Structure formats: C-alpha cells, structure tokens
Length: 565
Image 1 (cartoon, helix red, strand yellow):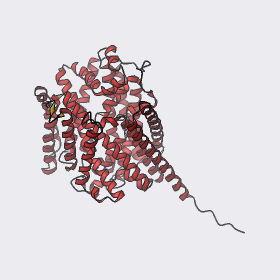
Image 2 (cartoon, helix red, strand yellow):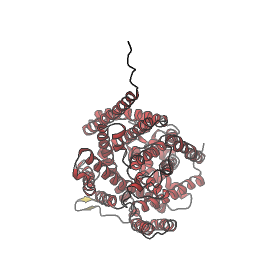
Image 3 (cartoon, rainbow, N blue to C red):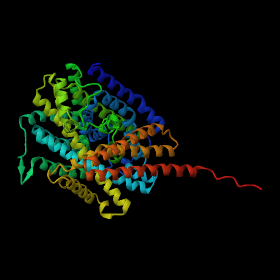
Image 4 (cartoon, one colour):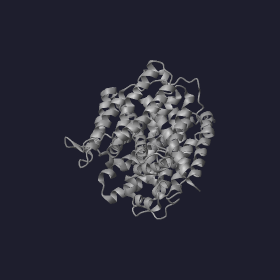
C-alpha cells in the first residue's frame, strides 16, 4: 500500500476516534458538566488562571506538547520498520493518549487546577504525592535542559531560523495586547500574525544570524542554551495572555498549515516506501523492538509530559469543563498527526533504500539524527510543490524550533508550579514564592546543562537523556493510575483507563530494567544509580496505589451483624 493511502486511512481513524470515542469518554466516563465552575473562573488572577477561548487554549496546549519529541521518537523507531511505528502511533493516539491527556485535564479541573502530582495526595495518599512530585521534577528538569540543547543545535545548524523565531515574540505580545487589553477580535490578528511568520521565514533565509563559534571561551551552542533558559525563565513569569497563549496560538496555525503542506507534498509526489515494513536486519546493538517501541515513541502515542501540561497550565485556563474534550483529546490527535507526518517523512522521504540504510546504519546514528531525518524527508515532499530547498529546510527547522521553544517555557512554568507544590508539601517557605521557585528552576537547569558533562558545556542534559523515555512513560503510567483510582472511587467506568495503565506500566518497567542492565554492562554508574532510583520510586508509587484501593474496599465492607446466642 502506498504512503498516501495509508496516511488517508490513519487520518480517517483519528477523526473517528475524536468523533465517537472522545464523545463516549466525555458523556459516559468523565460526565462533563457545562455548568461546573472551572479553576480559571474560581481563581481568576490574570496571570496563571485566565478563562480562555477553547481554540486559543487548544493552540497553547497543542504547541506545548508538540515539541521535537513527536518527530524524533518516530524517526528513531523507523530503524525497526515503518509498520510497528505506524500501528503504535495510530492506536496509541486514539486509545491511550486521548484518554490520558483528556483525563488528566478533567481530573485537574475537578481538583481546583492542581497538578496530577498533588491530586495523588487525595486519591492515593500524602506519601505518594511527595514521591510523584519528585519524579515529575526530575522529568521536567530533563525536558528543560535537553530541549534547550535541541534548540541550540538547530540554531547552530540552521542560522536561517534564528531571526524568524525571535521576530515572532513581539508579534505574539502585540496580539495578546490587542485581544486582551483592546478587545480586538481574535480572527484578524491571528491571520496577520500567521502571514508575518511566513514572511519572516523568507527574511531569515536571506539573512542568517549565526553566533561566533566561541565567545568568552564558550561555544555558540552553549551560549544558545544559556539564552534559551533565560528566555524560558522570563516567559514563565509573564501572565499567560502576554506571550504564552498568543504565540502558541499562532504557532499552532503554523504547524497545522505546515502539516497540510507536508501532506500535500506527499500526495503530489506520491513516493513509495524505501524503509521496510518490518526491518528483519537491524544493525548490531539495536535494542529489542518490544518493549522499547513503546518507550521510543512517546509523544505521538502517549506521553507523561502531556499530563503535566494538562494538569499544570491548561486546566488553569479552561473556560468550560466541556471544552476539555476539544483541548485534551483533540490536542492528542494533533500530536498524532505530527507523528504520522514524521513516520512518512522518514519512511518515504529518502531518495533510495541505500540512503535510508546509511542513515539507519546503527542505533547511535538513528538516535542522533532523528530531527535531521525528518527535515530531509519533509524537505523532499516540499520540493515536489516547487519550494526551494533553502526555504523548505528553513520552514521545517522553524517548525521544530518553535514547538521545542513553546515546550521549554511551558515546562519552566510547570517546574515553578511543582517547586511551589513541593514547598507546600514539605513546608519549605521560600519555594512557595513564584520568583524564588523560578530562580531555583533556572539554576537547576543550568547546573545540569553545564556541570553534568564538563567536556561539553551546555549539553549536560544529554548525559541523563537516555532515561527520559522510560521516565516519561512511567510518569504517564502513574497519571493513569491516579485517574483509574479516581474513577473507581467515583463509581465511574474505569476500565478505559485501566487497560492503558497496565500496558504502559508493564512495557516501561521492562524497558527500564533492560536499560539498567545495559548501563551496568557499559559501566555507566550514574545512569545505573539514577535509573534504579526512578524505577524504585515508580514501583513504590504503584504499590501505594494498590494499597489505597485495598483500604477503600475494606472501608466499604459493612460491619458484620452481632452474633446472637
């Protein structure tokens, strides 16, 4: 079957999932109430709690979760063949990511906009809450440090993307001011902003802005890491309407238009698959497809980070509870569409099988070149529409940079929230301050980036990056655990959360054990220690969840009638 026909079939399946399955979840499982007072209204402060139009909020939510991961993960998984990757993305989006993203948003709204880590307190217990918050903090620390490196590498490799990215910041601020302070309608500012974004791409292609290779003894890539972390910290303290919402909204327009162009290029060029359906001749050293497929492709199927965004920022901006279906479930569908494009670009975008085989000649090559493979493949689709290679690669790189950056500053905001919640949990008064927690979040990211690997300043997050996939998916499993117990306690149909919970926890636990055994063989003591600690925390949390269910069941057993003589 051709890539074009498979793409159409996958898109139809996504539509059916949103049209029918998400409606079933909304009406029968979560039982959404249009009159429920959401945290955005109850705690409206004009900074973090801001009632938001569902289309604007969807733009923020989608842009925040759709970073580089839904591109990189499927591109790496292509080493096993396009068939398994396509199957997991399609089924994972509809039946796993949809209920996870939708459900964590609903659960947070029903619990005063608290993060899924804090909700753990009331659902499972106070000890579980503290453990989960620590796991979440570590995951966010990895996301911030590594996405800063990802953006820095793209700025260094594609200096044409620098100017377009930074020019969109004042445009977003202007749109936020016009919409929220001047009452201007959203339509025309959005259209103008989108036109300017595409105009900036042409400007950037003709005026690249590379940094000097070294400044003050620090490489240009390391300088970009510093700049992006400073930007993320500042952006995380601004009211959401000033930059976060409008920029994410116009970015979501750009991504959707970009996806349309990529898919259009696919349909016009009508390429054939150069990658095998299932690769029976994987390079030596490639890990087993099961269960590593479920960890390699996280974003685009199911990702624990999505639950942190749903319960961290999106829940504080939801205008009506019924909007959570569109924001949460359709946000997952949007990411699935991006992952689908990545699969097609890396499976059919290479010119020949030999070119594909050279790129996927080793696990290390596939892992390091995921973004490059997507840019190459998508660029070939755009060339069929008469778009020059320079403009095409600039456009694709801007897409990746823009969404990695939105993920970065959303993640910095989430890390601030988590630190404040840790401060409340352990009565650490300074952490309750937004400014102090922002500084700690920034310094911890800088410390990881520059101290973890002194030989490569700025890229220290990559030292712990091998732990990201399993940590991210275990976080998704823990979120599903909280959701399952919550639904069970409310007397709702919890089986739709329980099945993904069992699959995700089983696959990721085995994956973590395999990874730790490989770290032991490689003599990587740091990854062995950190990986074992994360695995132990997650097993502990699961046992806490089982114990909570047992306590609840025992409390429901009526007392035995008194014995009579």
